[in-house]
Image 1 (cartoon, one colour):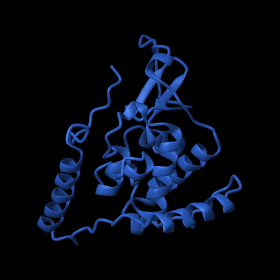
Image 2 (tube, rainbow, N blue to C red):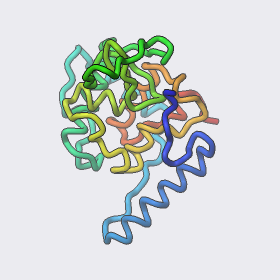
Image 3 (cartoon, rainbow, N blue to C red):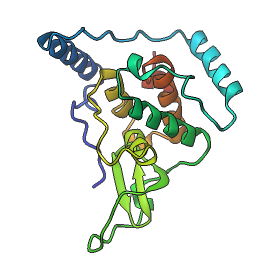
Image 4 (tube, helix red, strand yellow):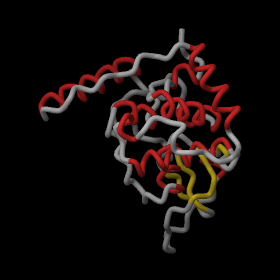
Length: 204
């Protein structure tokens, strides 16, 4: 019921799916006469460790918008960047917890319903409406706490944003925890790539 649909089929063919998406973005850019996007190489572990230490040392519950790559560099709208930073703040502040679909009480669809942030996370579905609120993935959470409105973020804006929301990993989406999402989102905002394989310990 709550299984999230992966539009590129990456849960069944991870590496091939990523290569296909990146190729499609390049072809699309060429057809439109736009610059061909470059895809970031993995950051060296020691560099990432130093950056993470600096982030942890500087975090005091308030995040400035200058600690991360700009919206221009990320190639996303400023409002989306701001919403993702607010989402990371919520992850790091302990305001969001992982839930399973079986933990949620069904919605009474006979009554009016609107998505409301309730501090619940599950990567398997953009939104999981329930009686007491809405559980959501990274993108859905960003829309809710960023005030963007449901289904307003274009996940296909860039390959890196797409893979932030649809991880190229072996793990089942519903098993991805808040701490994993936090690290992947910080990677994306800091380095431009979620690097899910590293976050989930799947790198060779």
